[in-house]
Length: 260
Image 1 (cartoon, rainbow, N blue to C red):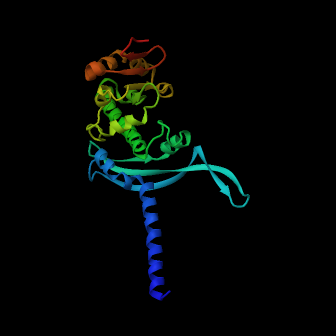
Image 2: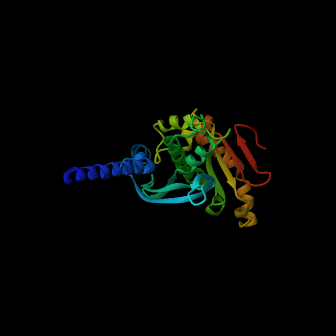
Image 3: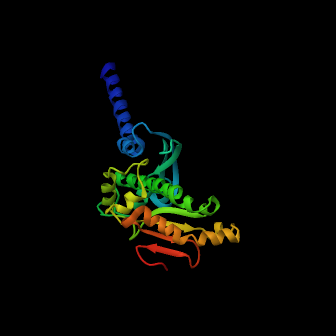
């Protein structure tokens, strides 16, 4: 073999190895692989991948062969977190993390052909759904809760968008991703309450340990705000209104349905 043939072979081997590394890195790095999906969700040019972390899970393990002992052992599985910087609807910069941890736990629990197994794109959509829940919940806090309660009392409440009947099936995330309103800076609670994709509702929960730090007068005012909060939610969402509220023992309500 001439020196040129050897050099050419080396170049081919290096190029092939580099190609394998590139494709592996591409498929393992969601901000690269799903750039289009992140453009659709955060807005084209409105987001930036700023950091990556690899961590060990306490929720699933992987098997490996010990070359020293010649047996199979288990070690904690690894997952990635990617920090995304974007500008929210108020013009402020926020950092949110997306992770493949849920997908890897799901894959550990469900075999390859299981209908419950997430694809990477479905798992990403689940992560983005959680971000959209937070954005919509912040709007409820600012537009409804804080118009009824002073700041100290409002700060005792955890406001979430949630869902009933267990985790949605993987195909729900495929359909959610195609909804035109599924964007970080335009999504609202009304979008989730009005969709027929799944049974979403608003959850408002007062943490007892926070309420206990209020004065007795503030605690009384918070608990007596139940009917005002209900009315405000029903006015805001009309027939789509669906919520559960807990402000303390004996001060709970849910709708549709009767107070309890």
